[in-house]
Amino acid sequence: MKKLLSIEYAKLKKLNSLRIILLVYAIMIPLVMFMLSSFYYNVIHPLIPILDDIWGFPSIWNFATYSASFFNVLMGVTVVIVVCNEYSYRTMKQNVIDGLSKREVIISKFLVVFALSTIVTLYTAIVALVFGGINSGFSNALEDSYFILIYYLQTLGYFSFAFFFAVLVKRTALSIIFFIVSFIVESIIGSIITATLSAKIYLFFPLNVFSTLTPSPIMSQLNALAAKQTGEVPPALELSTNIAISLGYMALFFVIAYQVLKRRDL
Image (cartoon, rainbow, N blue to C red; front, side, top):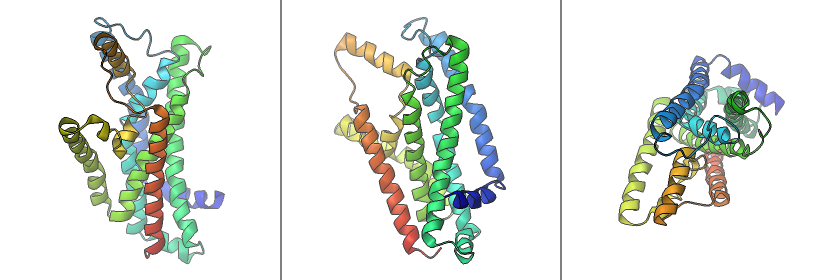
């Protein structure tokens, strides 16, 4: 595994697009957190003070992962670029020529996806720890920290979907277009099904399953408040069910991609 990661690192460290996207991600996470918190404290909180402190523990875990989730699409584009570059420059074929087995080459691509997920998750956790520690100390820092693990699963879900498209299409531009458009298409189909059939059906769509892993803490509180007043609870999956379905979709995307790569001429 160490050998495979070192080979992939040697290729990725020269990829300028990866550096730029990671830099954008690093800058935008705290910026978006500031923007969302400003909107909450200036617009919502004066009217409905539902959250005492979204910048302190334990609320910061949910708030940070929700804010970071907006950029999983951007990081998914990175996965597409990394995988499609392998086809463009025929580096997978070269790796096989240099002595790696086809299975090792495929596994190395999976390792890249898991490594990217680990990097963005750790960074998000550090941002949450810094802001939460400054604002409220670390006395209850571990409370609700499970959101970080859920966010890790969410990134893997989105990245597996991006990996799936990149393997099937092979061309960078087309893969990115299909990947991004799929979010729009699913949303439109989900809206139509919700309006004509049932909102419960849309709960099981793959991208919606991934996105609901990190719910908005503000909307969650507003929905809970509305439920107390009206008695109506918006349909939602239990967290355990959501996690199980997410794992199922992630496994499906990886398995299909693996089988395609295994049978295809690299």
